[in-house]
Length: 286
Image: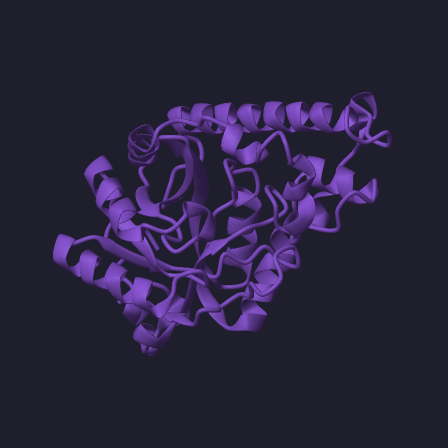
């Protein structure tokens, strides 16, 4: 039973939960207050914000959630690299003030910004309307979602969304695949040092290029403590497999919509519909 006046005389097993959501701090379109309002509208009572490589909006979200009687879990989604592939690891129940965590996140953001600069310089030599000097002065509007380089190129009418962004780099390669972040074991260790639990995000994600069984086995070896079993990109087969592995290995079970506001079409709060009774959240403070 969850100790909160909100849940008195209530069947907590049926509470709606969403433990993977983004805000304007990374590539979502909703600021903290709007996010909390939308949580209420979706009937979600326990949620986590997991922005990419930043904890910038967590304090504001926590305050807004308290005011509206919602249970909030501080989280983050951290980029990791292994054998030339990019993986995402959630940290749930973290202490945002942890020094080691903030050092890792800062380094990841710096790597990403440098990659964006490099990608714009490549396109400057390919398209006459692209100017790196202009890009450096460009002020991004976070409420649009996405990231600075993407929105700059949309404004230059070279692409319309993230879906056709990557086609601009033919002959150079996917900019994100050029990044080398910290290895998974270092990311996992840092999350644990920050008082959180490490969760393999969306094992069915397309950019993982399949092989989810090998990926899960690898991450378990690296020390991961849970799997995001419920996610829009997890097929029923992947969800079943993840649940079986979590049960056999005594791993945590989480789930979330990976909603980015209006930025990612087809991602909506509370989809998939995840209830507290479906999850295993031992060690995560709620």
